[in-house]
Length: 383
Image (cartoon, rainbow, N blue to C red; front, side, top):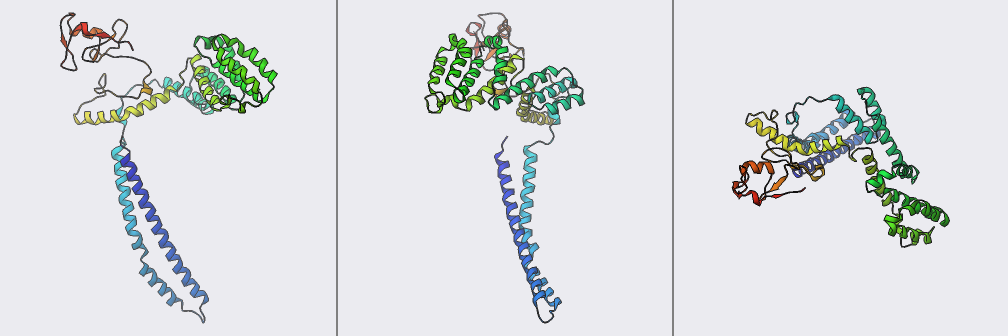
């Protein structure tokens, strides 16, 4: 969507508004000055002033100033700019998006569970509890328990308290090892650095022998570096290892812990509801254009089994390497893998077999370009 034109129109409205406001303020100040002057003449004149004369002079001066005439021009320009800006917004942002989605019979209970899970995932437990009670949502207690524990750990890490995180890592040691995660070592490294800064050298040495030495088989160079840090106990900021004091380590490790925590409890790191809404927002312009085109052709697209045009989404919304054959409309599998043809287009193996009429030497025409292709020239693709 082109937003530069909207920004330019908004800037013009802002400029006109400032001019109109300035003119209004100037006119008010002039009127106020004339009124104050007239009052001063009435109060200070001797002998008894002729009020009617002073008021008549005031009226004549205000008429000569013509404050309404001064304001009329800038106000008209402001109204014109506002009118154009409103029309531009209506043109760029379709106010009615109801025709761009299908009429689907939602399972409202499932939708409510998704919303409740989202609220708990986003650390909005009070709102989540209120929603669960009002919507009478069940079967999300486990999710709440998991996320309560996760945020308790993360909040402790914000105050440099690693005890809950280390306890969680110790309980899930085997699972973390299976996933190839070294987060437990990273947590111990942070704790070791804290001891170096605020504790004694003997305490740091005891900690590294007790908790970090068991990781020596796979992380020996890292442990060697930590052992060298002991020589700089209490003055690590003056050592060659000052990078270990960077607050970025805490932020990065907190994010990694959230990822590993969600992974162990079978949850994605991002809220499915947030991802779905973001993907829908990105695909909405294409659906709106399709709606207008189909309406112009007097065709109903909501009854179609699939969209007649692709909806391209960013890489952030592509979670699996899945290929769907554009001919058969079926998803590729091990028995029906995607095949790269000599022209560069890709079809599933079964579609190529049908097009070649099961004859490996018989050339067939690519459905998307004029190239003649032979089955022997096709190569299996691995995503």
